Every structure is written in C-alpha cells, then in structure tokens.
Image 1 (cartoon, helix red, strand yellow):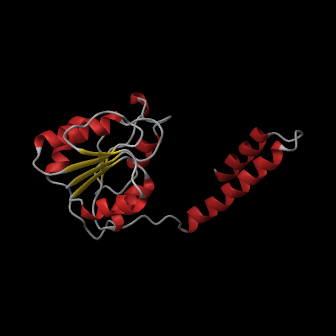
Image 2 (spheres, rainbow, N blue to C red):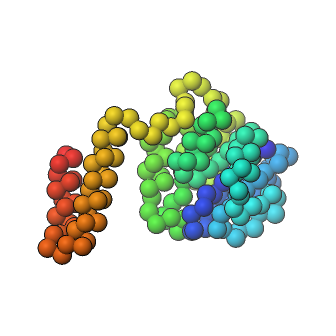
Image 3 (cartoon, rainbow, N blue to C red):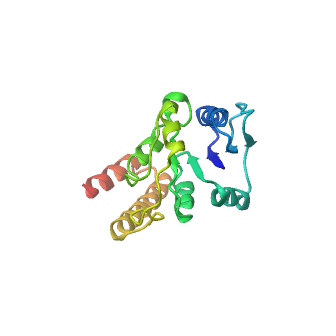
Length: 183
C-alpha cells in the first residue's frame, strides 16, 4: 500500500492529491491519500480528509511507501517506523502554503531522504523507494546548541510580549538586539 499525506494545513494541496491519483492509475497497489483541506477528487484512491492519529499511525506502519508533505512531525513518525519517507513539500508558488519553509526544511533533511519538488519526478521514487539504513534515524529535536538557541528565542518571545504592554519599548529594537547577539 502507498500512503500519501497532505497534513492538516488549511491551504489545499491539490498537487499531492493529483500525484496520488496518477500513482493509482499506474499501479495495482492500493493507494490511500489523506488530502487535508483539498477537495480535489482522486477516484483511483481511498480518500480521507483528516484522520484520527491512531488511524494515521496505523497507515504509516502498514504502508510500503509514505509520501508526505514536509511536516517535521510526520517525517519523524515515518522514520520511527524505520521507513524512508518520500518528501513532497508544499510550495508557495502553487498556493499550497504561505511561504516556502517546507522546501527549505526538506532540503536540510538527511541526503538519504528523497525530496521531490515536481510531480513528474515522483514515479521513479515510488517504483524503487530508498531502503532504510542505520544513518537514518528519527529526528533529534534538541542538541546543546539548539537548546541554547531555544532558550534564547523563548526569552526573546517573552521580552517581545512584555514590550507590547510597554509602549516606550520597541519590539523591533528588541528583535534587532537579539539578532545581533546571535551573529
């Protein structure tokens, strides 16, 4: 079974749904798509708008291949099952998200995780998906540097929120100070 997931972001992800349907037309394998807020039809697929987390996790476990948006939590969940996700990031130019942060994030994943930006490039990854190897592992969310950065950022957010109540302090000045300190 091949499982496509668009995530839960409110912008539709028609390209992923169309890719799932095109995949279903080429294979005898069952194709499921969690299409989120897209209403694009996929007559060749079993289609779900949103799934309860238990069902979502079950489908990831059972799938031979998982094609996913570039959502860190979904990618991590697939990696926890010792499977290599095929990452199909949402893109701003197609109206799939507000910016290209998913493309940026996907390009920074381990090189053993395929990132597909165009629908035409997807079939070759579905036919022979990459195999799990020991260099791949679920994401480690915090290391020493990230932890310090997280604390700094948390302090910045608290400072910015407190400045909103204090009109004598500029939020921009607080942000500029924090950015200069990080360089």
